[in-house]
Length: 401
Image 1 (cartoon, rainbow, N blue to C red):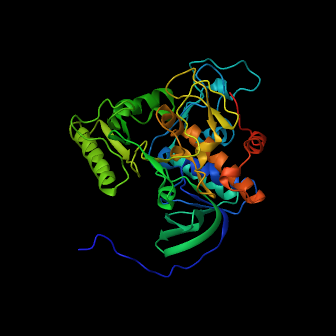
Image 2 (cartoon, rainbow, N blue to C red):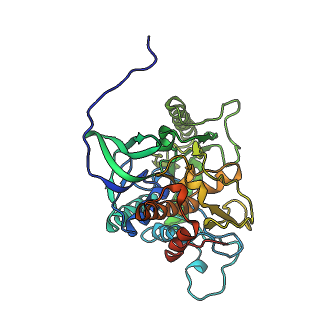
Image 3 (spheres, one colour):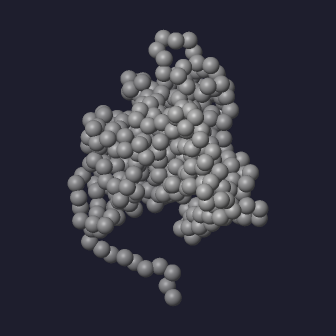
């Protein structure tokens, strides 16, 4: 029996765009916003019915710190805008010191971070992109790049309406798995994941906390987290690690997580706990990232002449990083850009680039880079770092720590 089939179909050609962003997580949102605000005709394709990715659909509702843990703001621009939006209409625990104007620096231990309501954040993100003129396509999969040599001419999408082709001048891959990049032939680096499954739910104890404090931020109880923590503690003994790209693996990851949670619920009293939201996507941390012109490995304190923005470390106070421009692309693919956890990173660097603030930072840089590429007829490898820095600084991005 043959191991492959050859498929030939007629695919309708749809509206052309300057910029198409594949993926509506925080990185894709930032890329789409940056491109649209700089005048690009922009479409964002999201496979689910909600924006926000892991932050909303994945129920990982902690907006990691924008600071260095010693009172200094590190990551700004759209990343900071989205943090404020995440708590604008729903609960949050952003320390008051970070919202004051003209006050002394915040206490170092109170990080510039917050919990947020994922449902409200998703609604606010939808409104934000619509107001900024981004063409939003929900429930649509960006399935395949159409290539002419190493240049991508557009994306083939899949939805209930069938298969369609959308031409574009620049593509930003913000899928979280480097789906477009890998299928275009961009070399990629594989990650590994512990088994983690996090749901949201309340208990009699968390409800009492809400009543006592009159603060909904306490409604969720952390006993709905099963499996591993960040460092692998809790990963089932003897269980293999997960890459998470083959569907067999991803399905196993989800099945096992659900089974672990049900086991915990089964062992608890029915009148003491109430799960109210299960994750709508696999909560994988690092699956695949590109091998770019540069690779960020998390060199603390290293200055970059081609920095696209500064970042701290959500795990360790006092760390300072600058993300280099070359993590956004591979020079052999002139109009493909990466954003979020798929930018070129390794080791500690991948831990830093995969979280919300840095994902938004690289997304904004990618959308800005796309506008300069289109406006000046340049390829990704011909981008002028100083020009991008000037554009980002005008949008409020802190380039150097």
